[in-house]
Amino acid sequence: MAKSKNNQTPSQETVTEAMQIARATQRPGQTKEQTKLIAMGIQKGIDQYKKQHKAKLREMDKRRKKEQRSKQPDAETTEQANNSDALPQSPNKLPWVLLTLSWLLFASYLVASQLYTA
Image 1: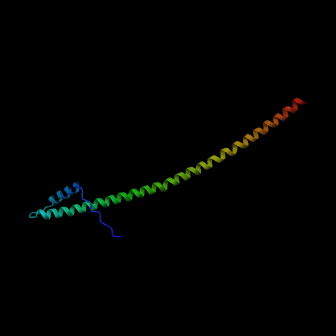
Image 2: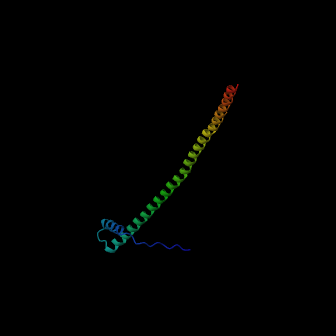
């Protein structure tokens, strides 16, 4: 498939800027047609510069977003690793403490009941 060129009309700002530059560099004896041709060349140069600048900005934005995406999962995995390390230690102690306490209370109940019955 052949690519069709995007023939966009240049902005009025670009046209006036190009004409001002062409008039500023006008030589004595230069015709209006020659000045218009020079202005068109300057205008094309300005348009090309703007396109290149936009492309650079898009590329920089893509790189920045890619870096953010690559850093974000790393931060999430470290947080998850920290959370997974912290959670199992606390619950492991609590059941054992409760079990020990319940057995101690049961043993003290048996001893107390033996003392009062005898």
